[in-house]
Length: 248
Image (cartoon, rainbow, N blue to C red; front, side, top):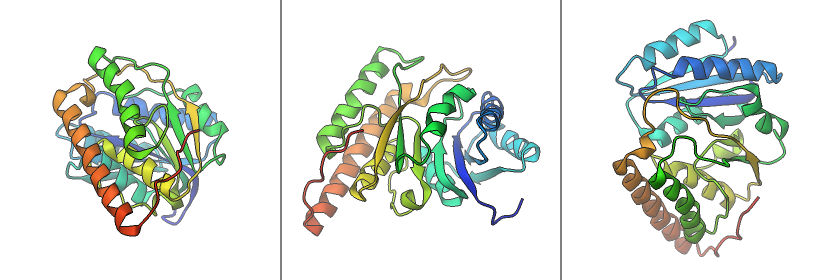
């Protein structure tokens, strides 16, 4: 495979300590992409894993000529996605959780709408494996995002598909989960078009979701508020008006 080869789609899989699920997810992605007739590369970002994730990722790259592995010190979800977006060769780039199994039906809503908008925003109808507190937070978070940024989307922390040339124009500062909101807000400010698509969430096959930890919840809130202060200062300095509300 030539280093200059391009693809219609790239899929970035950020992975931190996902030795139990990474191989199943990545092989499922390749099977689903092939079944849908999508020529695509897969980029695994091993985000400083302390288990065998990196070794598994390298083995997967030996199996798949259109699979790239990036190893880095731990930088959080935001840092892993930044790295992946920086190296992809696809016209569009899709994010996919390393802990979620995938079938062709899971990718089909994105494949069917590829090119219909600059950003496709996956919307979950349910939160598989979430406890009561996590369900409450998943309801509250989009409300808070709408209040702070006037960005009205039903789900802001799930699977996104971006036009690569556009997302690369965005300077992403957040390392953790708030990077997903930061990307959406900054793309909205660049007048990107948005489309919400159904995207079902499946239970993890192994391990525990980091979003279930109180420390991660606190860091997410703190990061979101820090980004809001940064975004607001930049807007005031430029004399920009409040952006028009975005909804799909």
